[in-house]
Image (cartoon, rainbow, N blue to C red):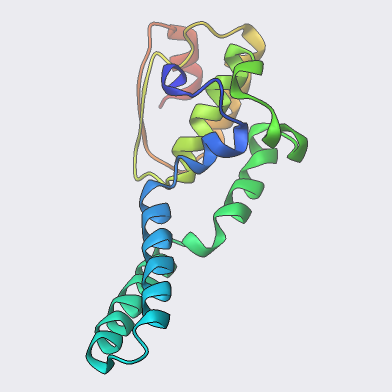
Length: 157
């Protein structure tokens, strides 16, 4: 996932990319809201728009999409980032910190399962230790593929 990061994007923008479905639903909600204002003379169209708006609202609430900023803010300290880091370019972070960004994006999506392929590749010792300790705190089931036997022995049961 590190190779998929946009090095020119800010950390905030990169984290926001984790919310594809949420962003689409919020954008559509705003479109419907605008259309509703314009359709004030057409009761049938207004009813249709109100029904769509209600469906969108329920979907947005189910995805917790009203709280995207607070979800990002909540995960920052868990990953070791500060609020000031949100405006920094992704490319300014080291490989180990980029791994944290990638993991953060995954966690923001509330996955049912994490599939990690060689997660310790190209990481320094401090980053490997951080990753190991961090993964131990998660309740999310994981499938990990790694040649790092020590990492696997310490992490997996």
